[in-house]
Image 1 (spheres, helix red, strand yellow):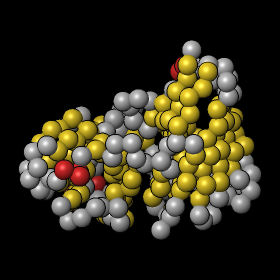
Image 2 (image 1 turned 120 degrees about the vertical axis):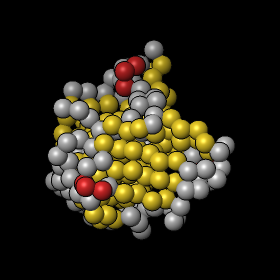
Image 3 (image 1 turned 45 degrees about the vertical axis):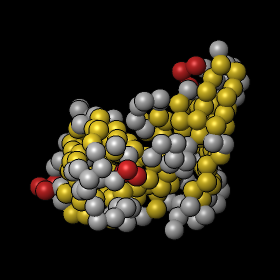
Image 4 (image 1 turned 90 degrees about the horizontal axis):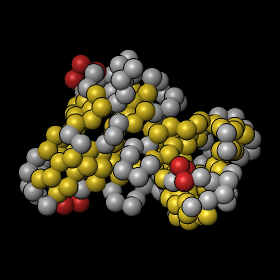
Length: 113
Length: 109
């Protein structure tokens, strides 16, 4: 069984540019989560999809962040325009159901210059 | 909002010594999950505790869930160099995991 895959693994962009991160969850996992870890700090929840619906986006920092999961399969997280404080590692995770263990991808390391 | 406190932030032990990390929640939890992240890697699920007072073991790792379901601990007996990494507790509030800040474990051989 393939795990959660994320693309790209690294992204370096300049402030003001746009970046789109992609996550492919484990097949059959309806629940998809985005998290972010800023250097040395805790892993922070961004949002949660159940299939194509956003269940909770309370962790999204601001309206420069847009997450989608059209068709309920893969998800994208777009940052536009990127700011310096957006740098960090963005993790995607998926689970079969609420309360079940979450399986994480390798993350996308985003650096804003 | 939900608050999760995890201590210590960092521990450096001699190989063979024991290690413990603790998590505390401000509210009662439905369950708690533990994850390990190796340097440069991603969080990997270790275990989930659901019942009040539950104790689970995985080889040298012992996980406990408090009676009030507000705290939990992970204890490693006789650490090995393969144990290095950051250990996170993840507390489930509704439909999301709120993670502790993590405890970084370094093991000197």
